[in-house]
Image 1 (tube, rainbow over the protein chains, first blue to last red):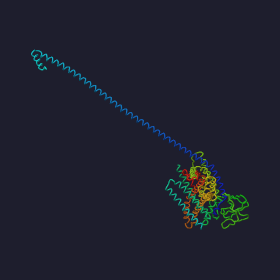
Image 2 (cartoon, each protein chain N blue to C red):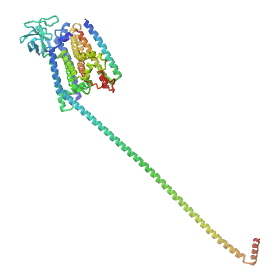
Image 3 (tube, rainbow over the protein chains, first blue to last red):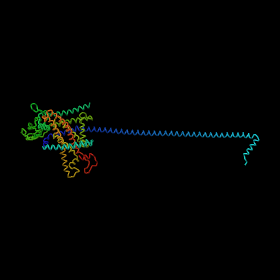
Image 4 (cartoon, rainbow over the protein chains, first blue to last red):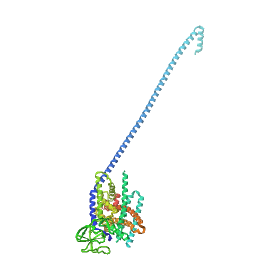
Length: 166
Length: 63
Length: 390
């Protein structure tokens, strides 16, 4: 302890103090202040650039999300359109089939009706023909029968025999 | 003579203290490597305080 | 191309350091020349640790047995009973035992162990007591431009040139070139690792200038102490005392209301204990903190120099036991090893001094935005809790 204070040089202490004050003031004014200002400025610049880049990236992401959404919407719309078209097609085919069936049915019916009426006409004509023929035959038969007297009598008898008088 | 014994005692004490500080700091860093920076700073501060104490004692003891 | 350039520079740096160490050893060898015994080595080391009034790079004895000194004298400025007296240190003719008496302006001066004494009127020789203090003379207040002052001036000039150059570079471009690229990270390191975390985001700007100056001042002076020039500036207690007192003044002036409150009338403890705590806190703030700052730097650098010189002295002390080659190899190997440790210590001590200064300033300006009378914290802010502990 004694040595320590013995070695202590007041002069050196004073000189050191003065020099240190001068050094601190000089350094602060001419070196640290401009250095610190430039460093801060640069850091702020870097921070600003980073922020701007971040913002741009976020905007880009938003844009991309928008695009995605639009694309999605377009796809959905296309899908619905496809679906509708398919439905319409199916319906058209269905309709066409039904119509064709109907038409075919009605044609068949008409044909049947025509056949029926032809048949009826034919039958009626046949009946007429048969009646005329029968009358003709009957006329001829009767004419034959009535050509002589015996035979006429015989016939009358026979008929009388048949037609019992009640 | 007594000075030297005193200096020896101081160095023993300071050595134990520094060992404790260093060892615990190592433990801490091993447990949480991500906090190693803070642990080192704290370790250096405490070691410096201890060192100052030891030097002070050595100089006082020197007479 | 660039990488080769850097590698070249790195190699240059390493070889410079190695040369420095080798030169240091060589310097000591040449300087000691006639130093052989343990006692002489001891005296030589003591002499080196002290400040000196002339700048001697090395000295040797020529064939005629005369002591030759290679260096230059420095002005001696002393405050005597008759006022300021100035003369050149060469008048003492490198004598340090009070054998040479310098007559100047009607006064007689003698230099004993680095201290200049003003002899009583008419005395023609120095009477020494058993502790080698002059009995017929008074110590003068010595404002000489000593070797340490030269060191301080040199390092101050160096710092100014470097950092003024760096500041000027920023005017034209955003990124410094050349040596500025080495300085800028160091400045950023001090600002971001020492000033900002220890003082706090709000106040650190005001104190960064002081911390940067002190950091580079101590570091460069520590490094200068490792060169063969043989500076031992940060190993002078007067220099470290001045530095410590600067820190003391700064944190005392900038202490806010909370800081003084915590020192003088500690909140949250019983009334009776408060005065005792106040005494402890006052002693801590005004004596222990600056004293520890002062002694730590002084003791570390002085111890480093003593060990360095002792390892070099192995060359002479163990010459008989190990032979010239053996002792030289051992000495150079050990001192080279220590040189790298000392490089680390040079940085570490600058770092610790700056960091503790920042910490003390931070404690003085810390803002306690919580009320101690209200128990507990409203928000568990980490900084808040930390502020409570330091």
